[in-house]
Image (tube, one colour):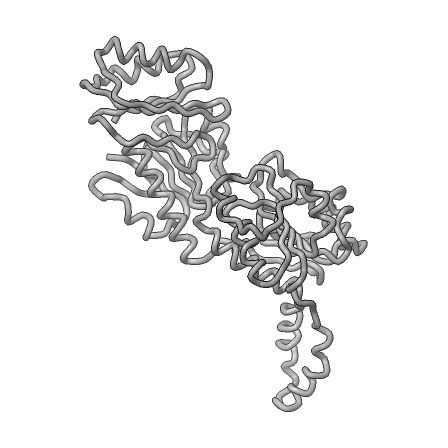
Length: 389
């Protein structure tokens, strides 16, 4: 019986995929094999000795102590792309709001409660509507920084809206490149993109390399009419630099899903309450993907969409399977294979993958697996975690 501890409200559509006869799923599960969560912060939580995997039903993993999990041989999953459509739709709405003063106009209408005659209201609005005039996005240039699942969808849609789209992503994946329209102009030099963009939308992960990616130096390169949309993470911009640019007129507007008290009350800042992925469909998609990945890992040892372990899959060719992770150093795999040979186990198939400092192995074998095999493999220098199937 696999034990799954849940945090937050996980979509029932995802939870229902766990077979009840094979999985014990609860919020107070003792000594869990895996944790399934959304936004719960686990940095200060004690890591259970039994824990093998953590699955985040969402893309961001800044609420998880990933380095500590890696040191303990714990696989961390996320669900990239599962909420991409929800974020894409919100960004398009934000793009419209940034180009047209929709928010200001709607608020103004709601304030006219002293006018109770519809004809008078119509005449008044006809006279005042010029206060809320905007510009069309058709023909404008959209700069997309980060061309992953979300960024590529927005870039393609912006083309359909008649925009010129330029994109920058030095680490674009093969999968994302296939999804991206050939009409999106790839620009390797970020400075060139910044100087051309009328609207700049950010879709990069919050990692050390992107910390305060948009700073005073970056903002000095954009046009004063440019508006920035941040639906990535608050850490990817330097807020003080954004505020200074808004105050001195070198930035026309800032739209974000990550409000800060310093941004409140500003007419040139549109703030949303972190609702990028807040749709029923996105929550269901993330939960289903997270559960599927956990089940495949716990039942077969396969790894897909991990943020700290290499993607590793092997079609089962034998009844018995062994998986183990180790520091990515020489001799570890050879020493483990020697133990298997000494135990009379014949290797039918295997795969070995590495990612940075960690390596992961799946080995299908013929022959009975003795319980003592776990401790034998775990005793090999460099091995972090072992599981027998």
